[in-house]
Image (cartoon, rainbow, N blue to C red; front, side):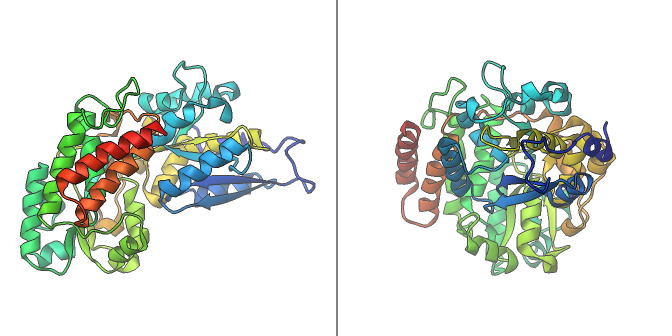
Length: 422
């Protein structure tokens, strides 16, 4: 496995037509959420003094990021030299592969072994002739929880004992009812939408391997049992009064972390960085990580692509290769916790033996990494993000008491169909 130093040494300098008048170029990287690249950027710039890297972020809100990226690509200007593409958006962007550099034309084929097979395949066009993205992370699932709030509610706090409390979602609800009865002043979970997304991806992954669209790109929201099953379970959670009703990624949601307003949150690996960033240093050691009810699942994960409009394609490609290399993925994991999509990285002691002091010393390498190599991905259709937004908006209306579960389900189906038709 190449070292970071070796990878940096091969990065070279900008070509003459890329270089600015002073010989330095600026590479802009567009991301959402927290990718953990800060130290990697610095390493790259230290080894390549002719390159400056600027990251543009939009928080974690894909509903803001995706329209901007789509607009930039359509206009032929405005996008970064490297852009992050969330897995749920890959099919949509692969429909117009000419918007991106074909990385297979730039030596990427030799990197295939650096990625889990399904992750590599997600970046390929349907005919396998173009690769528009190199994988970053996968979203192995767990459940993060506040040990202090569990203790206050008279519940076990040790992670193995907590895991035993909820092998199923029905038992998770039962634990939530016990927590609610203890009247701790906090809700049991943050947001019904986060829990719904976890359940639907988990259920679909164990069944047919798709949720909102089938693999022929037919919208199946109203006919796929996995979606309705996740809906019904989430309605039980809402009906039991367990949600704090915080809109995910909202200012209210961020404040709820700091104010200890909820006890559990569905927790893909990348969420650990979000929790630490939102809850702050004062909550260190008050969080821990248990198994997710229902066992396993995958939420999230992205790719890095180079738009064809970039004026610095060659340098952007080299940086993308560096950031998504096994050592690059390890570096990002150490900073913000996104779980690598590289089998070499997953087997590296830096991942396999990793613990997280903020989460009470939880063995995050074991918790998230043990199932990553056998994850069953869920197929994402052409308008996945737009459809997902409508379904989760419908969940939210029920959560806020604006619609009944039956009305919300009909809204989810109808609005999903409208979103898919646009």
